[in-house]
Length: 267
Image (cartoon, rainbow, N blue to C red; front, side):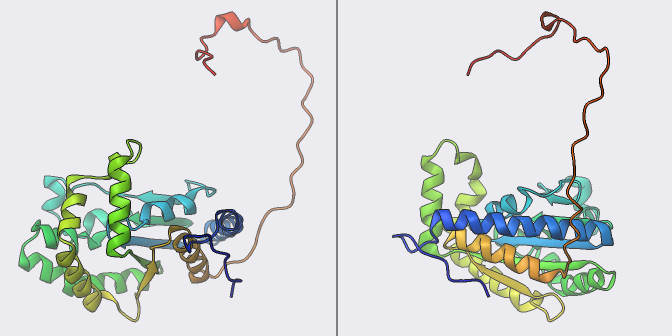
């Protein structure tokens, strides 16, 4: 059990304490990464939740100090015509982890139970088939040896509105909003009902949903990372300290700098 976090005037985790704790957890993620790589484990983590709930921010903090050859992010776009003709799970199967990999899905096969259901991008038959087959699909993944962890980032109505307005007003963040995101805001109730139905069918004993209270982004990131570390037993196999060898003396002469094209020095 970690010690209680100090809060700022808004009731959120204090920034400096958050940064220190985040750095500590990121060091643990590096240890986990090395254990997964060495032991040949396969770890698959799903990040789902409402728009602007903080999924991307949590993923960004997880991968900040890890090796992209070991920990990689999958964020698939709209399926192509060819992919639409395939078994629904097929394009996700192609992205599942190999030995020694951690794959973070920034949205996943649960698109069918969320945006596709609400926006009418799938038929009732396709939706019902997904709810029937998804638990068995995940059971199959787990039986094959994959460590599957599913997170749902939960954000309140008022906080989501505040984040949407912040993105609308900030040119640096406006790219995060799509027409689909704005429509999802208008259909809050429809998405709530779709999420409830999804949980009813896919929150199983063998593959439960872990809900992250995401109204406080800092708290959500810390809680998520701490929990993820607890889901994969690992040991610290950090290598011994390294020493930098002395440079060997040779007769190398650098070519004139004028022979090279440099980026303009503007700063």
